[in-house]
Image 1 (cartoon, rainbow, N blue to C red):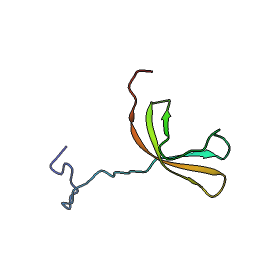
Image 2 (cartoon, one colour):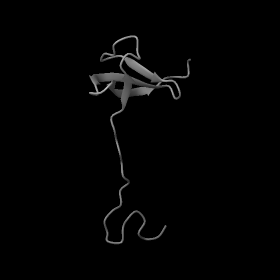
Image 3 (cartoon, rainbow, N blue to C red):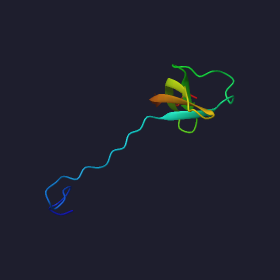
Length: 78
């Protein structure tokens, strides 16, 4: 790649842009037959990613937002 590998010509290092975000699941009022509470877990069936709800709040319109943290990917036991 050349002598400026990983650097701009001015001498400043180029860093990759890292973007992080807090995952949020959103549900319409009345869609779920139960109330969401902190500690409930949600699994995405497409990739088996497991999330735990940390906070539940209405979005102010017609939905409920559930902030979550990712716990990991479930083992291939299913």
